[in-house]
Length: 213
Image (cartoon, rainbow, N blue to C red; front, side, top):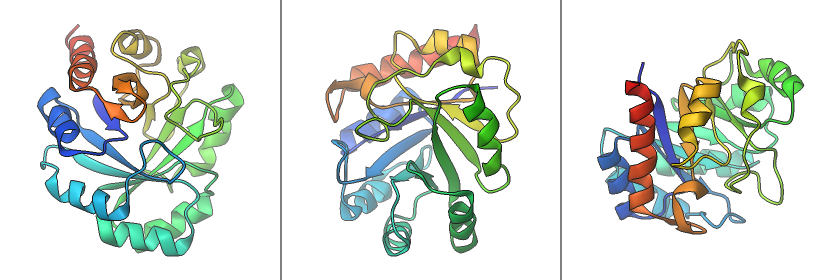
């Protein structure tokens, strides 16, 4: 089964085109003002309209209040909404009842108990995304997850791996975790928030080479 690839933190058409050409399956648009990859809802909506059908659009929100969440979903109309803060299963369930978008929940992976606790999102999240624990920002920091924590864990919910992935380490990450989806942001940048089309291509190629091996 082919590994899914999400290129997150995109902010322009060139990066979207590079992701599509390289064979990514998802792109991420970050609406969180503290992030260096923040895009306004107006720009996110424009980029969403510009995205080819081969890519699913993921809109990332962090502890957004109900009004902002509703506005974001209506303006951008993403395929997926990814919650990257301290959102509860109850909140995800409420959003699910009012939106047709897939619901993803990012979780900072500290230890094996984090994986056990993530079961509380079973049935309300369509996918869990295991990322490095939150620091000054909730994601996109380039900090690597301890991949061994995910080795041989029996997941009840579809999941993905984020946190510190790059073209030169994604193969090892996949070998250890068998992740069905990998999510990269800072690992394919030439500077914070600036996507590098060559690194996007290299990352996707490394994943596809792993799939073929």
